[in-house]
Image (cartoon, rainbow, N blue to C red; front, side, top):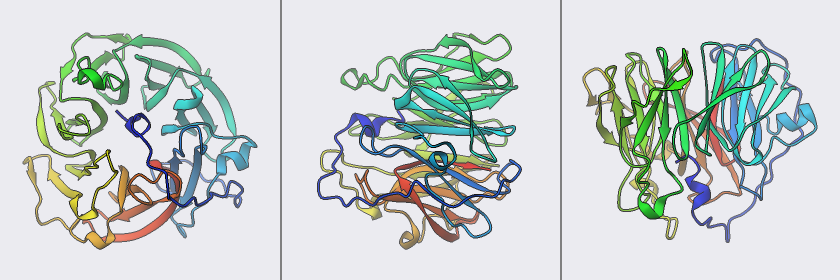
Length: 363
């Protein structure tokens, strides 16, 4: 599940702390769009020790501005932000440890509403509403006019991420706290009818411990199944338009854009937090032919790949790949980075992020 980093021992001894500046420069307001202005970065911090922060950089100079939520509002973003989405003129941020979703003005970063909801993780928008997966077993529906939870529905233990397709919302049900019983009540993606906001009870069976979801141009939904972070490795599953599911490839992170699926296979030994950089593999799959594009440049130059990948997102307009990373394996106290590549895999630049970056949200 998305919060696995908090469920395992944090190897913090001997790691240098690099402070994040919470007071930064003023940002000129822009009109929200689909990635034409810049990028918000959610930095999770270190649960209970380092607060989460919101960073931003624009496409003019890629200068990172950290702590912009606190600068705009005079208060902390909260404990363990998980995910965010821009919808209309608002940015919605799910903050797990603080049991809330922030609705803020995407231009000014000012708070519009603090929406209470339990253990929020994934967040998405569809049909005029915001939907949140809550780790307590529910999905909540937020009205974007009233800015409050108007309904919730049970889907199963520890849902992680959501993806809308047509009239349905697909929700990864991980059973992620039940590692002692091999996540037995997970292995599935729940299906909600958005027209009635009811659980169809037509779960799609997938691999162990499903987490992040992503969708290609043809409506294939890809599910990152995390395994048990040990003997059972992470795999990517594909749910086709007819809800048929099958294992697609090995991997621990994935993001789709058009007919391409970018996959990271990042394997860490959590007993000693070792993962030599060379052991991380990268692949790009053609989701029409279902074959790996071995000629693609992404991941071939390990000198420009990050030390400890944490999240992957793709800019909707350009197809540029944003790969977030910690400073080192198991380092949850130092500033991380965002490594940026174009759609061909060519390395473009690295931008400094906050502590443990977990999502890039295109503005």
